[in-house]
Image 1 (cartoon, rainbow, N blue to C red):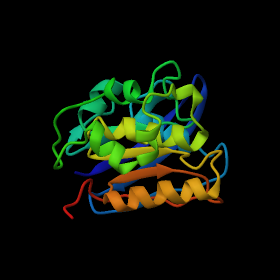
Image 2 (image 1 turned 135 degrees about the vertical axis):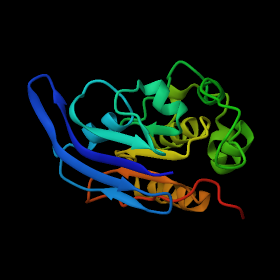
Image 3 (image 1 turned 60 degrees about the horizontal axis):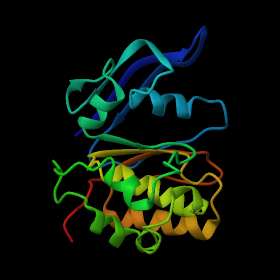
Image 4 (image 1 turned 180 degrees about the vertical axis):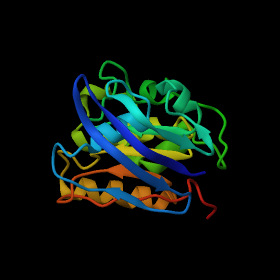
Length: 206
């Protein structure tokens, strides 16, 4: 499955942020978007995932050959694209288990589906905190939960926006190791001083 962004223009109200962006992410690639604050990384991520604002004024976004430019965020998620948003955005009043099961999709087009058990195997710390409210988790635990929540939708493409934000290097090492071990297909948007990124096929056979 390939993500194709062609001649994309997008912005907020009267301010244009993206000026003719072209981007192709194939199924066997690793892609990083690097740049200082205000360069439009988050705007591009939000636009790809169908979050509004920003508003697309020109250009197209296609995934697996289908035009998704004007689709809503839930339709894009159903097409196989999941987002780990900047700031984690977990549901603080829900437990870890409730956060994960609230978005669960039981089928997968890329192999064995992600389940509560496989996410807990992937992030053992979440299994230890499964009855805790998300608002009581540390920043690193919330980031694990945000990734796990995205995995529970069984995506073929995972988009991560600033996944290293506010995390200790030791926690970031764990998250990088887990994504790499997953054989993940992911596109992560981050600042150049802190991180790199991964993009490969989800759930490769071991």
